[in-house]
Length: 200
Image 1 (tube, one colour):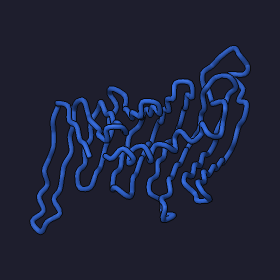
Image 2: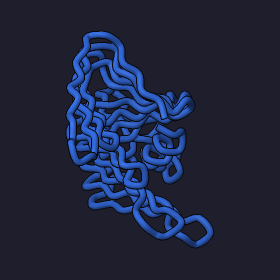
Image 3: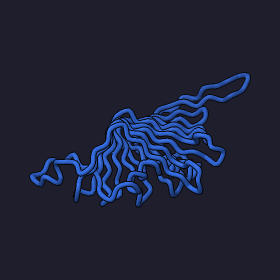
Image 4: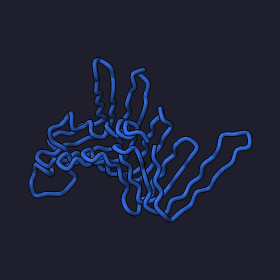
């Protein structure tokens, strides 16, 4: 993975910081400001333009922000980035998004899919955590993540990816396959309990 490949795909997750000075919080608190959302949106859509051209589109079924909590919550979120040719270069979806702007952490939950069409890469998972400060994307310790890159498909637990180094790895329980596009196509099965790391 190139650095921009992961970074551009996920940068839409951080876009909400540009729109809100506060964020959403689902934590229960005796403070009414943390229980009642300061702002609430239904069927929200946000676009980011650079030099008059659409760069990022974000859609959400519902979105809430809570005063003084530093968090944000959104439901059924769809992101897309647009390249210089005005074509969708990457997209992402998650059923739930919780953002903490104080820690620069964005937690995606349930039905996550991230696609980079330009580089033919797809990531699917049930939960992923993105840290915009360290530029790290990680899965939980026991959660399975699947990555398809070209003709190679890998699934495993202990997933982590770095937008800085342009690599991703699984800490354990990796399986998958790789198929060659030739007349005599061969499929290579991959299975290991040890750490597997893939670069550019």
